Length: 466
Ligand SMILES: Cc1cc2nc3c(=O)[nH]c(=O)nc-3n(C[C@H](O)[C@H](O)[C@H](O)COP(=O)(O)OP(=O)(O)OC[C@H]3O[C@@H](n4cnc5c(N)ncnc54)[C@H](O)[C@@H]3O)c2cc1C
Image (cartoon, rainbow, N blue to C red):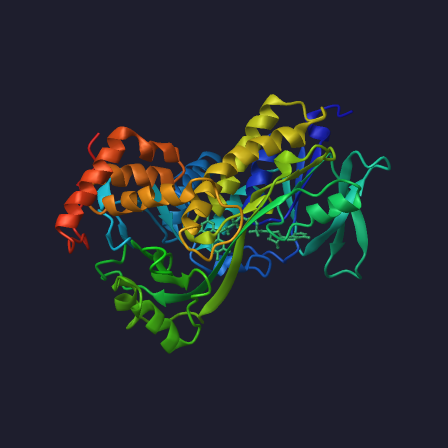
């Protein structure tokens, strides 16, 4: 039985965004938090071996930025001080989708534009500055320590990577698995005599190719985030170009269903030129490259249904990509991790950590958090006939209407604002389906059909009416 909070110790496996956010909230409820990370971690922005995705474009949704700012109040200023941009998202948006530019307008939703290594570094610095959090880097978790009756996890078996492969046990009152999509908890559960969670897997065969370029601050688009997304399923290619710190652009090009961008220079440029809007190609064709072109394959979105398990050992939780890894083109992973962290914080504030059932209660809350981004990502992916996996009921009909919503954002900023709220996970998808919204969508599409060439490239901003 635990006597006081100061006696308690929690181990978080994995010190990427999910693990850092878990550690931050756990520090409110436990005496000591130890983050165990397999890679060496240095006191600087960096992409590590265990998180290859950090070399690609990373957008942070507005709800993610809000949660991060709640836990790290000086984050926006710290980002800006390092040369990142924290701006009104819709005012600085140059987004071509479904055959036209979405209207630019001002609605006061903040976005942060930076490299993923910078964001994670600032989060890590602030997390490790807390007196009860320690990082054990260069240390791999090899397994779980459990009681002889296999009812409770009592710690982790770790191996310091520069020692002589000596495995020792780190005792803990709670262990949190934030080791990402490659999490071994399902195998460990099976080895302990538990049932591994069912998985939902939706295959999309998405490929990224990314490169960093020098950004000229005098470029008319220099402070804008630029997206070109396909009129699916007719088009399968996307491009994203975000301004990041150090007067740089990060450019990611790619496509669904194997239509991936080449990683040789002429092929990469030609792929940019083939996108349905010219902004990215016109900017990078003469820009100075500052990195190689780096590929990343993302075969499928994967969700592990821990919330459906009837039995689960005490003293163990799983979060972040280890629960759900989404098609990254929708930019939801870090926000989903942040939303799970806030759920964990609230649950621990309401619970006695020595009582059984914490995992079941957490997985139920985490599943509610994951449901909406999963529904949005998987729903959009099923526009492509090659997508396989559990298909949500009625999605073809919903997708036809949502395509009309996408088009309406080229004309009507009220629809545009509603769409941005749903995309940022600050409003429910049903908010796009009220009778009033449907009427606006229909009228906007009718207007657009009467002016098929109407575009909104670099227009001046308006403000969304209340
Ligand atoms: C190409 C791409 C682009 C993306 N773009 C976006 C985006 O625009 N916006 C967004 O919000 N999200 C994006 N994501 C998702 C985002 O990167 C993740 O959701 C986010 O990193 C949270 O993941 P995590 O911390 O749970 O896991 P990960 O980031 O995968 O981290 C797992 C950590 O655990 C460590 N680890 C693994 N095994 C062990 C072990 N045995 N012992 C100790 N440590 C271990 C790893 O080294 C790593 O540090 C993208 C993903 C990809 C693939």
